[in-house]
Image (cartoon, rainbow, N blue to C red):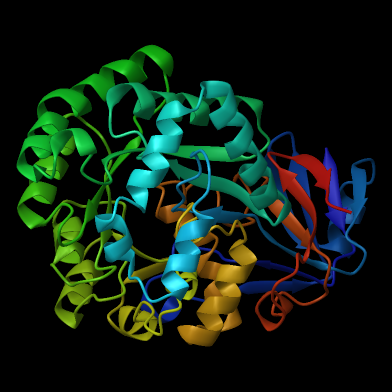
Length: 418
């Protein structure tokens, strides 16, 4: 048994994911402590009470620092090869994201590099990024394929996710995203590629997964619902096929245009709909009537030097679930830090520090359907806990551009960052 004690504060949420104006309702225990048995949280209370109750427990001194739940990053494109630094320069010269894609850059550029990479190369590059995220407090991370757009490379990306999960300590939640772009082999034939995804790729992916990850839940299926990529009809067809095959669902929507993807995600009971920059109030209200989480990726408009972010205040006012994620990817947002996403969300989306923390923990856990086991410091949950290097959790958003995580506890194991 371990006992983390002598904190300045223990900060958590109770009662599950938080809708609307309940977002940011925190339980703060001054001089808090947490008892851990194996991989599981046994009890939460004051240091005085738990030190007396568990006198022989192995003690971990929090050194009068803040204790918070491990961060959950519910949207990343973790596994890829190469980089696109030259495209950043193109954006600075005035080229838009869609213009770069049309010129053969963007996702297509990374697809070329990823197809050429071996499994070992993909694992090595992705592991480096995953461990940087872990050092910054992300204890669970969703990880998509989507840079193969063929069976062989997509499966290699999923295999890389399985290998990293096996190695630990970070825990990955897999997503198949063959519907990320139209590969060059289909020469812009969106209907033909959609048909191939539904008739060949999705059934083959299920077969591959059952063989290579027996006993594990099927990965999510995600679709890039956007003009000139997969529009509403194609997105609906892919989601329907995936749901019929038993896959849980996610959706990219409204990053550049409001096509109605948020409403479609809610209709299909997707775990989350992500990006949501151009989302209409009508779509937000439909999401609010569902269990679908609105996942904002503030690093993406920041990375694109755009002024428009997800309408967080409207999402909260509508009584929907709101979460934060990094959108870690090689194009717009190569950033592994959920701390930085919280800092952006308070500045550009007007979240409070408590709302940003809840959106990065319990609500982001719901966005990957793990809120019953992670996302808060509560008895019975997995012991995924952070000891910050600062005495007040609000400093996570007050400061930015530096790492304020001193120690990570993942499944009860202690990893010092200092």
